[in-house]
Length: 123
Image (cartoon, one colour):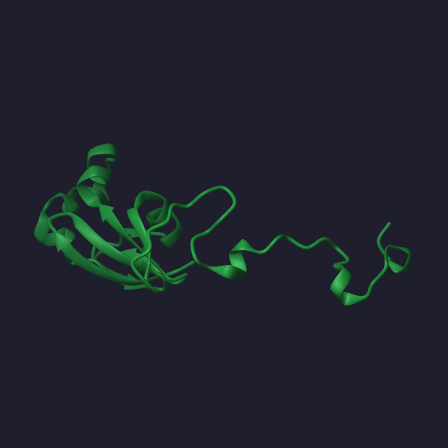
């Protein structure tokens, strides 16, 4: 998963667009209230917080702070499909509207490959 786009929608609030077509709202004020550190201090200023940008699929600031897309996905709320206005929640078994992530996991010898267990080279 990668972060594709970020837009400031309010002081310390960012609208995030992820690579598996979903969006979320990251509440930076809430994050900053729960976390401390030298790189986070600059983000307490709303003007500096809004200087964020996307680099290599992560959310970044000029001081070198980066938050990964996966972490941002976990932290964001009001996640929705970008294909429409239908809202959904991430659950243990489904990942929004991404069909590839919702497929059952295949075993070592999936039946559609025509490999029978007796022909397997694995012990």
